[in-house]
Image 1 (cartoon, rainbow, N blue to C red):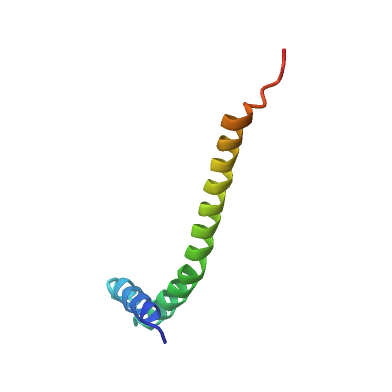
Image 2 (spheres, rainbow, N blue to C red):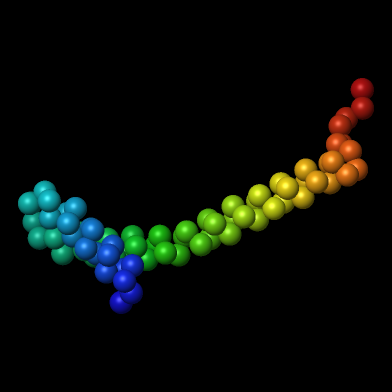
Length: 73
């Protein structure tokens, strides 16, 4: 079990245990699942964002070098 999963389980357990209705085991399980999902989604989101910014920068550079593709009237 990784440190991220343990921290997610601890946070989920603390949030679920604060209500005092039932045990905090289900909150720990949900926290561990959320931590693993976030661990997988964040790198994908960062990769997508960097790729989008690079493509946008390349498009602006092309427009500066060759002129913007504006429709003629």
